[in-house]
Length: 66
Image 1 (cartoon, rainbow, N blue to C red):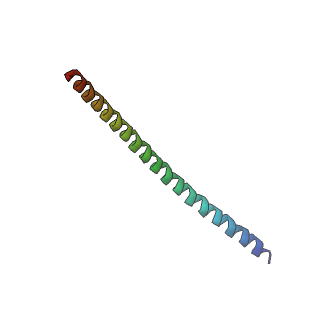
Image 2 (image 1 turned 135 degrees about the horizontal axis):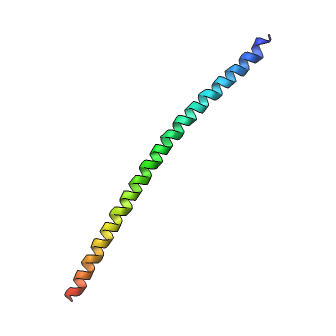
């Protein structure tokens, strides 16, 4: 009978260890996903700035034609 509470505690500890492993894996996956989103955002901001500068240059050329 003394083993039952100890076994229950051991089982709970094993569950917590498994949960920690799962959470660590998910955390790593989310960090990678976050980095991917950050890089994609930086790329889109860069492309947006390039497009903006090209449009501004076209506008300036059109104004100089007037």
